[in-house]
Image (cartoon, rainbow, N blue to C red; front, side, top):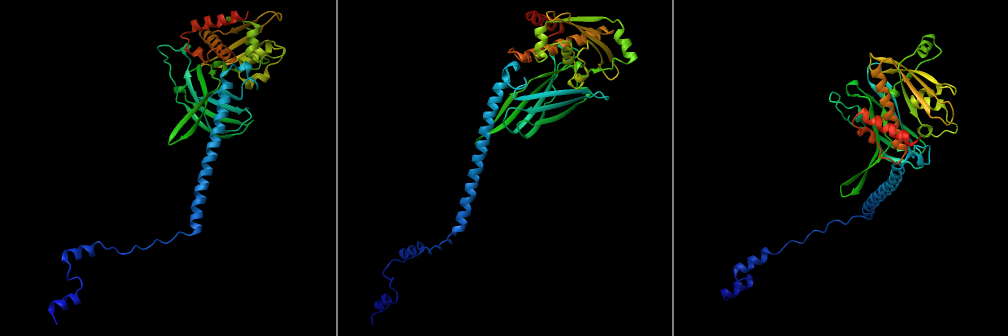
Amino acid sequence: MNDSFDDSFNNPFSSFPKDEVIEEMEIQELPKRSSPKRSFYEKAADLTTEYEQVLEELRRVEVDAQQLRIGLELRRAMTGCRSERADERSGPISCKIQATWLNNGHLFLEETLKNTCGNSLLDWSLVTTMKTAGYRTTPHRARHTNEAHCVELGKLLSGEEFRANLCLPSTSTSLPMLVEGKLMRKFDLGHGDLCVYRISLDSRLITLWDLATPVDGRNESNLELLDREVNCTTMTLPAPFVNLFCGCPKDLNISHLLKSLISSKYREKILEEQREILLIFPFSNVEKHSVKISVNRPTRRDPFTLKIGCKDSRARTILVTDLQAALLLEWNSLTRHPRDSIVEIGNSETLSEEFERICRSYS
């Protein structure tokens, strides 16, 4: 038998070049193992998770849209003058501040926020800032702004109140102080973009008048102080002007004016027929002054005559200026004039001129 025949029979690839055979063997791949198929329950669980995530996002967007609509309505209502607001002359959101002078010289502020807008507020924050009023700024008493205090409201239902307490150390307390409140909320616009929406509340000027304490005039020593003749500063206030910041009562009288001058926690002590009151003003931890406040109005057609009596002329001047500033700020918020413009007035003389100009416009 031929040897060449035997080789071709035993090796069928002998007729091919060796390089081509090796190349062909190298390109051959083993068959892939098919991955195990996911069960129906696993797929259903994934779809359920995705569906819940979509629902959660839709709920968040719905809440944000609702709160943004409420915020727009609140901002529109709070921008207008207080005399045109429908509810309690304070608008859909009222912010009241009670000031107390502590024995250690610290100033304690109790801030009360009431929601009367008819809707619940969700995830809003109350931001409070304090700054010294400009009309009392001097080279030795530089104007400063304290750090803002931020408190989360959580969920504030319609008709509910929220209270926040602030204690300011004597080193950072400088009266008169303008307290500004703002409602703030963050809105997620998607893709990591955030928007902060702000609503300005009514500002409040904290002065020594907020810290004054009335004393019992029936006490013998106090009666002596009331009867004593002291130097007085007289202010003439037109009745329409007084009626405006007293809340437009049905029968405006002297007691309404006396009540508007002191802290709300002492107003119930003022009697209807009362015409004068003795107040103790804490100028500092060691300096206090007794001040006699008397009001006269002969007839309903006459203006109110307010007399501020104090032996210390410096203290009397400070009290008159602070009262003018507080009444002007109240007038700003009750009308459509620019808010808080009083804090930009450079000195007490300019402030007094502005106050007299406003009073003359109501005469």
